[in-house]
Structures are given as C-alpha cells and as structure tokens.
Image 1 (cartoon, rainbow, N blue to C red):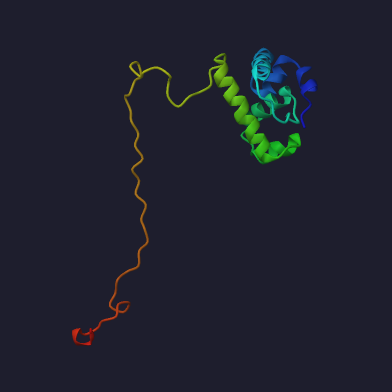
Image 2 (image 1 turned 90 degrees about the horizontal axis):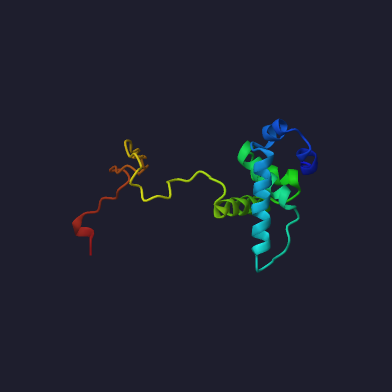
Length: 146
C-alpha cells in the first residue's frame, strides 16, 4: 500500500508526477471529503482506508488505468471495495461543485453547443443462419398427409 504520509512529504513536482494533481488540489479534495463525512446522518461500517488513502486510490485508478483488482491488492482491499471507493470519491467531487470533472454533455441547455459533426455507428454485423437445402428438408407426398 502506498504510504500517503511519505507521499505528502515529497516535493510538489514529485507529488504531481505520482498522482496527477497538485498538493493544494489534494487538500481541497480532502476538505470536500471531510465535509461530506461530517454531513452524513447515517453511518455504516467504517472503511478500512483513511480518507487520504481513499482519495489516493481513486487518483491512482484515474491516473494509471490499472484494474481495480490490482489496485485493491496494493491497498489490501477487495476489488469491489476499490470500485465502491472510486465511485464514492467521484460522486462527492461532482456534488461538491468545486471540481470540474469531464461530463458527456455540458450542463447548459445546449444552445451554445457547436453541433458541426455528428457520428453515428451504423455498422452491420452478419448473422449466421443455416442454409436451406433439399438434403436438410424432408419431402412428403400429399397423399401421405392424413
């Protein structure tokens, strides 16, 4: 498991090289996570990872595109727990409105969107069907039909 305290002691350039963000952005994400945790009314089982480690897990996932299985092994948690942590961090960052995460379409009504190109995937996939031949069909005379 990556040591978050050792990572935070590194220089700004090394921290950004490892995580993809600056230390100030990391602190802002941590503040947003703490605010979300403080505002929770219902608590469940606490996570095995600290908030800093959860953020680091999500950053490593976004930065390196490694499988959640491998990231989970590094942090000592199951793959499904790593997935839940990544989705949790994403949802908290989106709901905080402090961070601009990429979206599929802008939030606006779409009046100022330049729709100069539209791409449509219209590829056809052949379907294998059995061929009809006389050998595969059974011919019966009308006189044999009751």
